[in-house]
Image 1 (cartoon, rainbow, N blue to C red):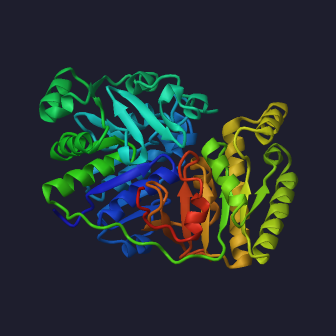
Image 2 (cartoon, helix red, strand yellow):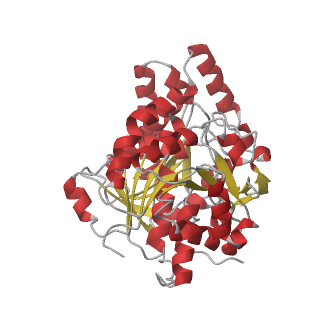
Length: 452
């Protein structure tokens, strides 16, 4: 292998982008996630990384925004010379024709990295995301559900999933022909690939359920990288590649890193309405965190209304930290009265949900920024995929490196930037992810837990 990175990726949200970096970093492959094309001096700090990514907020934008904003980022990543250029999507396939279109992203990516076909690997068994015969399943604290029956994704306010067959869902976003390489096909992946390509397929959805099928998917992508060099999928792509590299002896198996030191206090913000996050907030409130509700209705008011709500919560967070608690500002606790009041305010004010969600994420980021500056707290959590992207930008951070595991996909990271938060330890967590004590786990420094 050359000194070029092995994988580069462009993520459609911040939490998933960080998850890719975590998979590679914890497999012993030094990796970094940037928040934009880095200036030369910052890029030089991470010379020699095997994985290099850039995070975006594409998941919450329409195809016109993607067409304007993604090509320069893809071109920069392509120029690094990695054999695999990966467009990272959510492991629950969050997408719609007018919001976070995966089909539009694939079409855009093919203009930068032409490929005979694009592997689409969405499942990640380590994340309890499974694909069988084209249908995606996702785990929650209450079990595993087919995506169109998932308690969150089937009712998602922006990208509801009424179809678990991913190629059927994708057909509304692109006219590119597609084919499925299913679990039976993975028994002889090269034959399955030849058959799929013979039909003229340009998108190849690949099943993955367990270590065997995951390794077969990784081998299929890597051994055919000359023809399949542009890939779409979740961090399942990197899990599959790592498993193949380990099985083939290209890299050794390494132990996961240990925990970081325990922090007396952390600061956290949450913009998620997921029932998983609601349980995590409930646990946090009983275990040393000060729960501080953010009135999301403020985003529909004037700038003065928003500023007043931010000042109120910043003051409350600083006071909580002074009392020895960990402040946790949240816009909702599951689907309850807060959410209903917020939606009613949106309807009255005529503001579209995407704009409102962006304003909430930015406000939470400013609250976190001010709280960290005033308290000296050096560890933080942002909960919510879209919230993480909008919030991170308010902190002036430019790069992340994973340092300690928690659940797969939500590691504790060290952040880098030119401002006061350089060196901050931060975890980015998707709304549906994590154990009930996740916030406490990060406060304790993360670290691998043995399964019972």
